[in-house]
Length: 516
Image 1 (cartoon, one colour):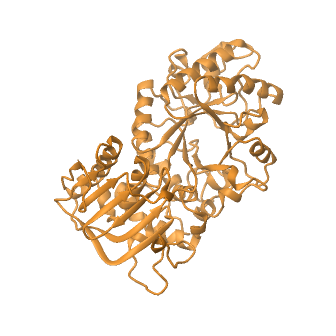
Image 2 (image 1 turned 60 degrees about the vertical axis):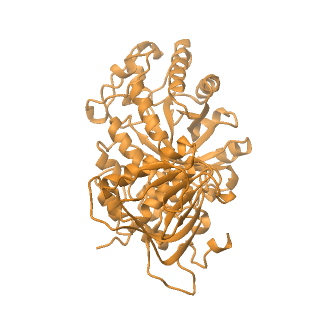
């Protein structure tokens, strides 16, 4: 594999030091691969006769092939049949022959004049390789209608695998409700950049968004509004399962969040018995936090939580249920700990591992639980202590990873309580060395939360997520040795043509050298 290692700058994406061939899309891949070797003068041409060959007998590889064909058929007008078997021509997706370093999600990509070969150990690795291959084709390959060719990819080899197993994006559908189609659109967008977790924030003060059959008023009443007093909405269990399946087809695991014991006004408004005084509060459409709490001393509270976790677990094939735990200002610490001590075993009972916002570590959850750090400081003794107990931390510092923070004082959307966050701020930090005294090995990965107090439609989500989401995605995927802002901003700028074709509404940050 020595031939794959380049004599390059810190980003690992330039040509060998002794040559300066014309720049190609191989230099513009986001997230940055582990290594890239261009083949100057070599070009692959997609033609009307191109077939997509998938590993014989692998249904999962065939599904990746069908995904790629589904992307390319509308724009090229080509048939692109997906057929089992290896071939030296066309596009081959194979589950043999990959470098051992690729692991469970990495891949090797080789582009020659005769064909394109993606090798991996798993279908997830093949899917990651397909996302890279898409970036080698002209941006118009993403179009939903037939375009004029030619359809070419530059010759070269890529060896690639992720830094972290957890590369997440969180979408808040509780503050404002987003339809199934809007969530699917976001899933497709995050999949472009090898994000593999979608954390759905399904319940909060302003709305309850997932049907719970044993407690139907959670959605019929608690889901009937949103910030600003709009109509709200919710997902039926069938719609939620459809979203989970849609994400899974893109090798993204859905992590559902039911925030508790705070952020629960929608539930309290739906069922009076969940309140200590037995009186249901009105529905809430503001954006303040920290005022609500389930009643810690009532048995009905735990019957409720058990029912909710049972139904959510049955609908969710992934490993995790996120139980919130943040900003429980209306709950004393002793009550919070007592609550979590009862709820955490319920998560285990239903075959899941608990995730939670970092405050829940004060209840000393088991080592299998995953704290999500959203703090604004780099000193966090509670995270260091949790790591000593064996917990692995997901990094989402609000000053870096919160996609709902304004870019600057002129940004029309978003909030600013954690400060302004332009693209360089989102990119220029090391998840493995961010919290003082936290060992790098204790970091499970990164996640980019997108809260929706001010966001009401897909165009709003996109404006706040792009171009910062690809920055966080690169921190999760790429080796730290490739980290270089000067290089990244050029690669990021090259993504804009693709976003235009896909109709992604993005913020044209002045920090990025967009094409004029």
